[in-house]
Length: 467
Ligand SMILES: [Zn+2]
Image (cartoon, rainbow, N blue to C red; front, side, top):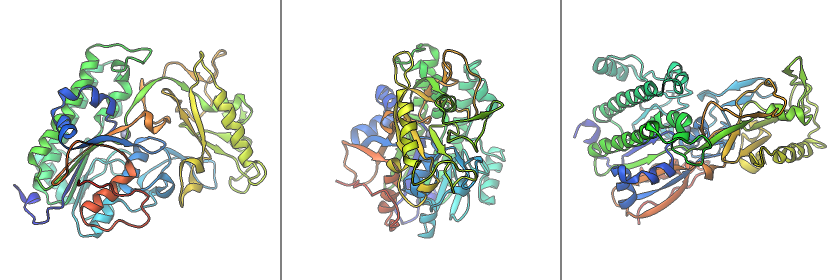
């Protein structure tokens, strides 16, 4: 036992995050995953329900705040800056809530937060390496930890995610892609295990991104319902990566003190995607969107999508050149758009399961910053990412038949179609319990376990862990 584990305080928590780990695949391969099987047979095991949309930054933010997007302010990768037509990409500065690590730090606990998406290093007691969508992604904080990592591993910057060049070659050179993602994950696991033993902490949490990246490209190799399903050596490489994730869990379990609460979780799962709907092309066809020389005329359009399932209306006194009257027309236009979208049929299939008004999905202080409508796609479909009008083909003006990815979760889907995983193990926890839990319930559950008061403004509620 090293310094990290010699403190008297036994209320420690280890969270092992696997971005995109899918409950359906863990269930399929459970006999090859001894540590997941241990969680399943002897402890608490089940599914996490991601928020809508089940996008990585929104989902981890929901976990780390214990709140729904209406109360933490992150609704999607992209958003419309209030009072403008500007499409912007989110970053952690937009987070309107304290995080689990800030709350724990204020309560005098030491935290270690490694590669969690959407993190800034401010106001924490402990150490952090910000992950995906963070401004200082990969740079260890504080300097003492950065120096230690540099001395021990010879690196200045931590690689918690794949570089764009590797992602671009995923289809043309899948072997190289898998080699790289395995290498990156091994290296990250080694650094995390080192910090786990070397540093003092009360709360320790790494997030491994590999499964998410793999499944976006290779879902077609493991899902027999995908039209391009092909079982081959790539299918084995996907399964092998689940085995690696399981081994990482095992390595941490070996080192963890028996009084530590261990939570294994993912932010969302995956579903098949074989077609995309180009929302702006459809809005144009139905007369809600106006173009000028091939570009969207934001001032003259009633509605536009910024590239996900989001739809933003052009409302008087809200947008600079608003055209929809809030009292007279706003709700009616939303219903019209929703009705039109739900009519779409492609080769006898309905791509859209539902279209929701923002107040039907979210609640809270920042609801007024949410998209006015959000589309929920059926399995097999997602929103095309283009925020622009794209070149049209005469037959299918708003359909992309060959998306870059064969698996998805964030374009946007019903949370129940893309469930994540959860396993919980710890002292006094009785086994054999099935669990289905909202991501926002985890922060209050962790605080409760650590005897730290739960802030009154959290949406989630602690779940009972002991029998
Ligand atoms: Zn994710």
